[in-house]
Image (cartoon, rainbow, N blue to C red; front, side):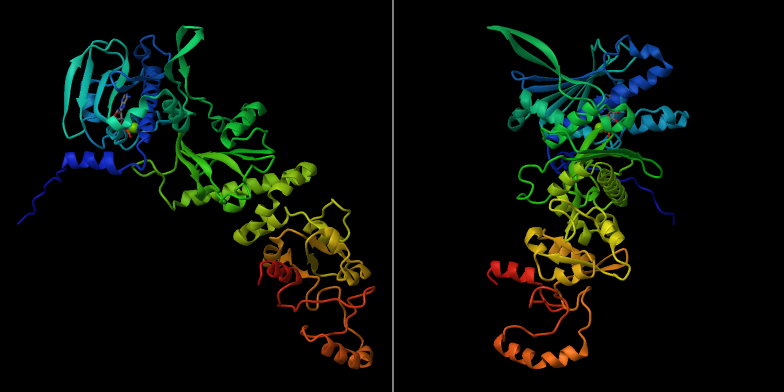
Length: 552
Ligand code: ADP
Ligand code: MG
């Protein structure tokens, strides 16, 4: 018996319900979806006009217009894009999950025109139905480029059926009229619309406009067409095509900063996956940076449209001071155009961003040390978190660190590399001493033995040093050792004769100060009579002080 082949059936009403009620996490994205469709429509007619200029109909003032009508309780989106024929409407709006945009790209590919195809946003064929999240009825009036007599009017309540009729539509393109629900009337508010356009569609190539009434003089109002989006996706341009003022302006609006950024990191990654990155290092620590919950992330755009405000996967927490955007057309989005979690491409982007940020910081450090010092004072502590969190980059991070040392003048700094370079030939380890202030540490008896041998000691005063530096463990094969611990570098053996001579004294001292674990002879000191030393694996003195302060 041969098996019978049957087609799946879809309960359409149910499916539409799913799309409008469960697909998107936020209903305000309807505006993103409809504006994106309008933008695609404009790009399509521009593309078709390359082969057939008649389609332009002398109308190339590309724009997407929002018209809120408080009386009718409607919000209309109009475009002068490619429009739709009656059959297009049936195929694209009357068929769930049919993307005319995807079909358009495939047709262009078949015609061998891939190189010239415009960047289009649509691909899943469901975005349009997001209109039903905010509207209980949607009317579409459209007419295709090049056929002035064939207007079509489509109307539906999103419940499983629609009506279709011929109509007048003098101008090319599409009007989507949303009959807003009672609880979505705020989308008639011009401020709200402005805010949403800026949020999702600010960098769209085409202007999104709205008529606004302004009082020009006492009692005299005038209507002007306002462009709501800035349209400047400067990250898509080449570095040499962007002016410093443009970077500055973009950064200020992105980071809500009033000052220009300290560093701009702008590049396009090419190869297997392509993406563009534009990042900034702020000149100053933002207000609240130390007290607020640490959050990192870059804004993620796909084809100029905002997908995620803060994509944490592309920026590690220890670089959370970096602000910026990443744009990749290659990112596979899920059907609600939210980002798929744990995509390997995100890791590729993160690696690249980290590499470029660290290289840029290294460049600043070498070329503009004063500027780097300002940066380091603001964000050095945060950067050090990377020593323990980003094992693969710990050497690069270590090279970005600045330290005061026993030999630096007050307010001047040295680095691991400089320290290593100046080490006497018999010194094999890098010594450091942790404490409250460099000033105080400079007077520490622990430094005496090192000084006597011509060795420098790094003075660490940042609370995170206590954890981060021991975890780092070594720098280019040179062990990092605490100068106040066990048998540190710089301390040699005590001659056997001395041990015998002072044995009785040590016994007495041990009885007098029973709180210490041991009393030992040392040649650690050259001027002071005695000092306290932590056991090699014990808690350090600085740590003990911190713990005492916390009441332990
Ligand atoms: P997608 O944009 O992912 O293709 P949508 O559900 O948003 O899916 O839209 C479905 C299709 O309807 C589009 O692919 C396009 O062919 C057509 N369409 C939607 N809006 C417009 C418009 N403003 N102008 C022309 N065609 C449109
Ligand atoms: Mg769409």
